[in-house]
Length: 233
Image 1 (cartoon, rainbow, N blue to C red):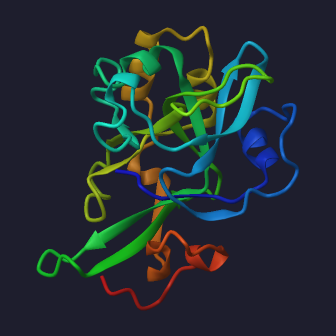
Image 2: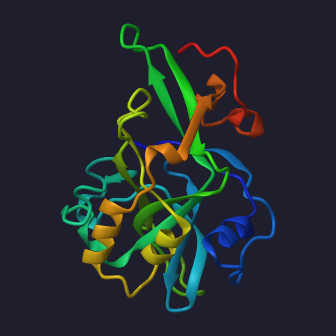
């Protein structure tokens, strides 16, 4: 799964990595978030009639008929998202990208489930990650966010080599595939094929243990992504 991410670079750095030099209205200051939890507003890339946009959108989504019945979903499985009753509408109309620097997973001791060690996972190249996402969000420069707006990050199987941390991970796309994912001309069927066949493999990533303080969503700062030398697991 994916339940905590980092998003700390300047917005322009994500856009340049995506092959988009600039878009209107982008904040010139660093995002500066090292411990981003679900239900907070996250910078999200998507296209509408005015072109590419980067907006703060709540991480969490439920269709109108499910709201209030259970907590909003934060992830959607790539194997079923395109056809699931819960997600199929936003699969067709709400493809987006979460530009990020990495994500956290907690390794657990099987004998002592309360004993956990957080790890930061990121691209070995040091480049930004582009998480495939789907959601419902404002359209057009004058539209106001709605209470029901939100998004989920699409997850895939971690694959051999990363299973010792968690069996699911965000679906991370190359810059070329991320730009294609955002193309409004891409059909839902083509998007499903892209998601199922073109996520980056495990060998593209690196991971290392980080301070336990990241487990508290109130904690923030660059020290949360520093490698520690004495992990408990």
